Length: 243
Ligand SMILES: Nc1ncnc2c1ncn2[C@@H]1O[C@H](COP(=O)(O)OP(=O)(O)OP(=O)(O)O)[C@@H](O)[C@H]1O
Ligand SMILES: [Mg+2]
Figure 1 (cartoon, rainbow, N blue to C red):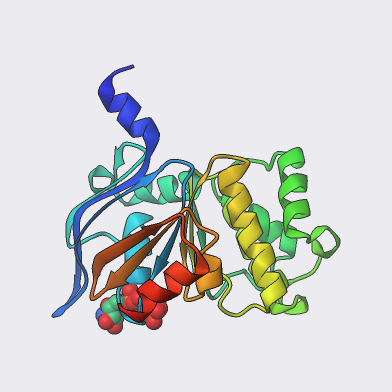
Figure 2: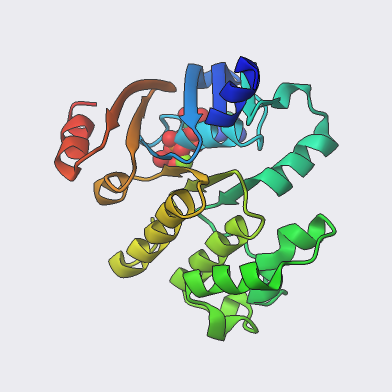
C-alpha cells in the first residue's frame, strides 16, 4: 500500500484552509481539520460560530469560498454537481435538525429514499437492522405527521444510516428531543462509530451529548479554537464557559 492510500484510509474527512464567506460575514475562517475514520467528534460553539456551515462544507452540501475538502481521499472541489450529489447520496448521511422527512411517504419509504434515488433496492436484512436499532418496526406504514417528534428524528437517523455511509453528519439531532429519546439517538450514532466503524460528526449544544464523543471541537467566530479529547461533562462545561 502506498503512503497516499494508507492516509486516505485512515482519514475520513479532511478540510484544508476552508473559508466560507457570505458577503462580508466569514462564517468559516481558514479552518483546517482532519476527522479520523471511525471517530466520533462533537462540535460545539455559540450560536452563529459557524457549526452548521462547517458541517455543510465538510459534507459537500455547500462549496467553500476557498480551501479544499476531501472525503476518503476524494477532492470534492474536483467534482461537478452530478458527481457531488452522487457522492453525498452514497457516502454521506446527513441528519438535519428539522428532520426533512417527505410528508407524503411512509416511514419505510422515507428511510429507503436515498437508496431508491440511487436506483438500488434496500438490503432487507440491513433495513431490518436499522429499523430495529431506531425502534420504528411498528411504525413503518405511518407517515411523518402520524409520528411524535422523537420518532420523526429517529426516522431521519435511520435514513442517514441506510446507505451505510462512510460519514454521518448530524446537526443538533437531539435539540428538540426529551432526554430519553435524545439518549437513544446518541446511542445510535455512537453505535454507528463503534459497531460499523463509521465516522460521526455531531453538532450539539448539550455537554452530556458532547461528552459521549471521542473528541469535542470548539468553534468561535468561524475558527476552531480548541479540542478536548476523551471529554468528561465537567471538562466540556469548563471549556464552554471560557469560550
Ligand atoms: N446562507 C447564508 N447567508 C448569509 N449568512 C449566513 C448564511 N448561513 C450562515 N450565515 C451566517 O454565518 C454565520 C455562521 O452561521 P452558522 O449557521 O454556521 O452558525 P451556527 O454555529 O450553526 O449557529 P446555530 O447554533 O445558531 O445553529 C452566522 O453569522 C450566520 O448568520
Ligand atoms: Mg447551526
